[in-house]
Image 1 (cartoon, one colour):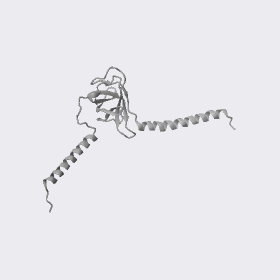
Image 2 (spheres, one colour):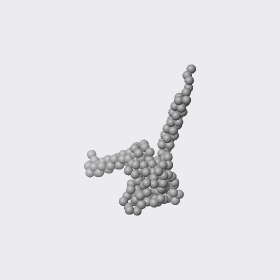
Image 3 (cartoon, one colour):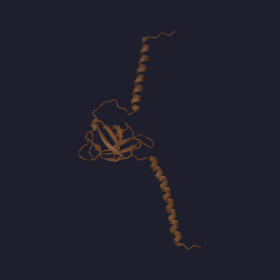
Image 4 (cartoon, one colour):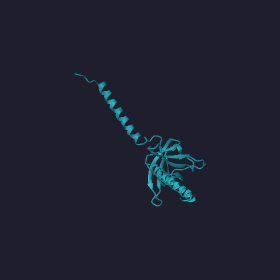
Amino acid sequence: MAIRGPRLEFAVGAFLLLALASLLVLAVASTNQRFGLGGGGYELTARFSQIGQLRPQAPVKIGGVVVGQVADIQLDPVKYDSIVSLKLDGKFVDLPADTSASILTAGLLGESYISLQPGGDPDVLANGDEIVFTQSSVDLIQLVGKYMFSGAGNSAEASSESNDSTDAGTPAY
């Protein structure tokens, strides 16, 4: 018969609390949420004609470093553009007014994110401003399809045109 002491019960309880805390941190980290540390952020908007697989909470990066996240995505009912709201950390408030935004994908099948490229304008973007210079997402499947079908069609047309021009100058026997 084993006797359970308070030390064993304390060790088991501490282990369970540590395991639950680890699971909580993992769950929050996997959903791209932040703990709210270093608040004081500000919002910018950007218009895109095609956003691809961009989702809310997707990262916003400058030079590969995460500086914020996508807060919201709406559809403009007049122009039918996607309006993306970006929530940036407060320490990046001095972005030039000619900053450009592009939707990129991390690798071939990775997540979509917004990449900001700061310009050289001395004026800065304020809270609520719109990023004017944007580049929409590139649909890889559509691009491959265009290459496969237009590339084969062009080479077939080119070869038939070259055959027509050489046949016209040779006599038929």
